[in-house]
Amino acid sequence: MAKGILFILSGPSGVGKGTVCTALRGKIPELVYSVSATTRSPRLGEEDGVNYFFKSRDQFLNMMQNDQLLEHAEYVGNYYGTPRDFVEKTLLSGNDIILEIEVQGALQVKEKFPEGVFIFLLPPSLDELKDRIRGRGTENQATIDHRMSVAVDEINLMEHYDYAVVNDQIDSACKRIESIIVAEHCKVKR
Ligand code: 5GP
Image (tube, rainbow, N blue to C red; front, side, top):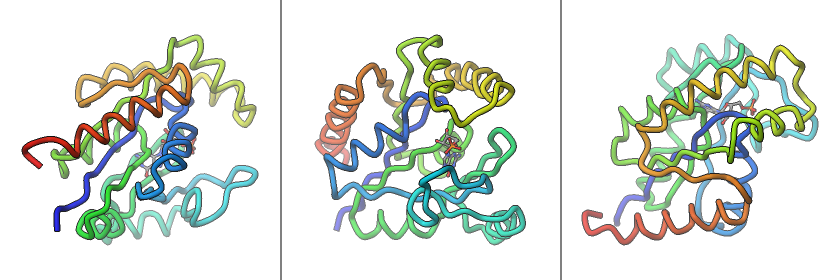
């Protein structure tokens, strides 16, 4: 059986990766989603095992030491990482899987899985990005400023990706990503 394809959806925080990813999963139910581990506290409405696996710092460090994470990154004071086993098993079973992760982590995945398909989600503009980070209403000013400066550094890393998708409208961004998924399945080398 052919292996599944690993898709990595990345880009600056606030660009709408989460929203686009959720919409995409609604349209392609067979696309498996990787639930990350994190040390940050749950936001209102977030559930353990659904949005994230919420871990203490010690639990997270333990996962790192036991090589249970495919990649990990420290982002604005918290750790985030992708559980390795689930990704590998999903691919071996012939299913596609999508990771929704920040840029440092995506670059680590590229070293381990160069055959992965790396999609960079871009904001229509930096002003728009700031509005979106603000609009979420869950972050204080210092965190917003920090996230903005991280975002500018991250956009500079776009050259390492296979595709760039502007998130002007969720629906159009989703359609472009769906087209990428179809095109990747049609590649002769696969
Ligand atoms: P948030 O705290 O807003 O849920 O996520 C912050 C950032 O961490 C987002 O850019 C999100 O995509 C990223 N992120 C979520 N899970 C992972 C992960 O497993 N690994 C990495 N490297 N980043 C992640």
